Amino acid sequence: MSDPIPFIDLKTQQLRIREAVEEGFRAVLDSGQYIMGPAVKELESELSRYCGAAHTVSCSSGTDAVWLPLLAWEIGAGDAVFIPSFTFAATAEAVALCGATPVFVDVDRHSFVMDPRSLEQAVEATLREGTLRPRAIIPVDLFGIPAPYGMIRDIAQRHGLKVLADAAQAFGGIYDGARVGTLADATATSFFPAKPLGCYGDGGAIFTDDEETQEKLVSIRIHGRGVGGKYDNIRVGTNARLDTLQAVVLREKLKIFDDELDARQRIASRYSEGLEDGVQVPVVPPNCLSAWAQYTIVVEAGHRDELRAALKEQGVPTNVYYPAPLHTQPPYQAFPVAPDGLPNTEALCHEVLSLPMHPYLKESVQDRIINAVREGLGKLRARRAA
Ligand SMILES: *Cc1c(COP(=O)(O)O)cnc(C)c1O
Image 1 (cartoon, rainbow, N blue to C red):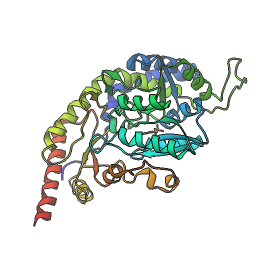
Image 2: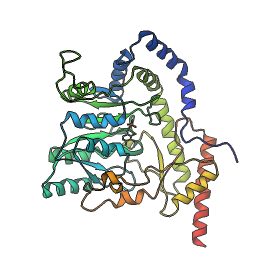
Image 3: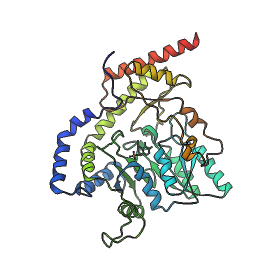
Image 4: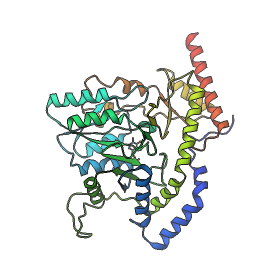
């Protein structure tokens, strides 16, 4: 058997930026400004410039980036927030921690993102039912593919709802010519190491064009501080700051980010060319560019786990994002779902398989992966036919 393949290779990238990061760390150590040092402000300006948002508020994680805007908009008990169930727990967690009610909506079978029809039906059913007040929608740009913001914003406008994009996996993505970060009232992203733009620890950011939201976020990030100094508290906040050291890492990674996005796009296209005649490959809508946090295929039900085991034997690591929908798990079982249920979500959890994806995946290694997938599928189908 040949060498094991990493699912994500962060080491090659580190070699590329290591010297600059060490130099930046040394400057922070010399200055002693570990909290809110100058690199944090500089990073925020650079991120705003990159994505085109008027304001960037950095924070301590992607989870906080989803939670803080809900606090800023005073979403709480009695409020309904519409979210997909086919996502990472943080999306639902942020809503539940505010005391609001997540209402689960189905996703599209091919692009994995929120289905606007299911959303509209869920909003209307909530209004008819009458106990909860619809307040916000949190579309998730799953695997890096931007959600259908045009239709989602229409629905939001018709019902007076805020849109908070959970773009934890999608920084760098594009929808209708605009970057992720400018597509919703506020956009949350994560700098967890494995995300497309990751730091060396936890980190996140919120993007918004709305000045009032920005001012509240800045205050909430530091214990609800007012303008009267350190001990002037004007609202309940929390501690959700990004470390100066992490800002140093992110500034270096942002310099090579476009180059890495191009590589991800090239690798994704190569996967699709090599696999599309045998399996369902990700369908990125024509008006979108994915940030390719994951490259996820859809394998017919009943074959996924066997294919996964066969690939493991060949030294090809895979992951399942996500094996169980949130609405079926104990903390979220009691919350409402869209009127027609979540059939796509429930099916996808048994069918999705994410392949190794990172900007430094060599063509020879990728060919090994493609061949292993094709062979594995061929064997499973031959056995079933026999
Ligand atoms: C990673 C992720 C988060 C949370 O980000 P953290 O930085 O790990 O807190 C939120 N939502 C989605 C969809 C994610 O993938």
